Image (tube, rainbow, N blue to C red):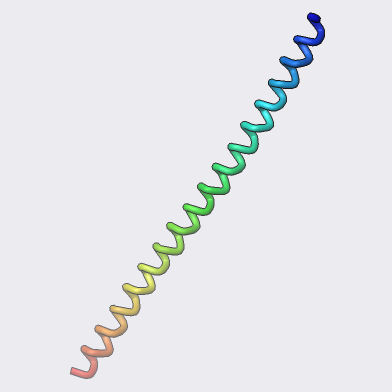
Length: 63
């Protein structure tokens, strides 16, 4: 009986650690995805600003 309880406790601890590892992997994947999205938005904003600046310079050269 004592050994059976210990084996169950060890099995439960192992399952808990596996679940925690899976959760951490999923959270890390989510964080990397969010970081990639933020970086793409920043680059898009930068290129939009450069496009506006280029249009303004072309307009000023014509005037």
